[in-house]
Length: 210
Image (cartoon, rainbow, N blue to C red; front, side, top):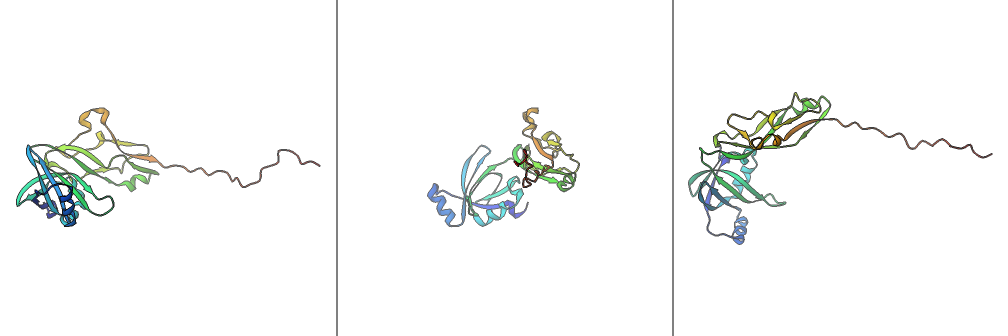
């Protein structure tokens, strides 16, 4: 595990909107960690460390280590609040995990060979950018690759067409066949039909009067 996925945190007892505002002014991020039958704990993290980590795609599905007052706690990021227009992380929610218990996460999709597929004359339409999955923490994939090189024009890949890593199951497919959602489609390219030139004068319908 890289340093990007290990963050130091301090337990905070000064709670409320005013306290959170003061923390943000001090370049810190308020957070909370909960789960595994333990009491929620309010935390404070350094904004610069959080901001650097959240730029990595894997941060959102990777097992993280939060050093809470020096004691390591393994967890997953469950929610992140950002400022509507500033590059500021406003709040974080972490979920404690147990290596023996399965967890639900969203794994990002990486589409491979899209240019090859579009050479057939189609355009690619992504219906999903991530897949909700369940697996043990050790089996969480950083991302799921889908090769679309052999996709034909008009063809759609569904969740049931995707090969997931060993030990990983789709949350939607677990609900039944009716939840076999479309993932990606190679649509036929739109044909633009040009209108006839309306600038040409119309032929007279009646002979001119003599």
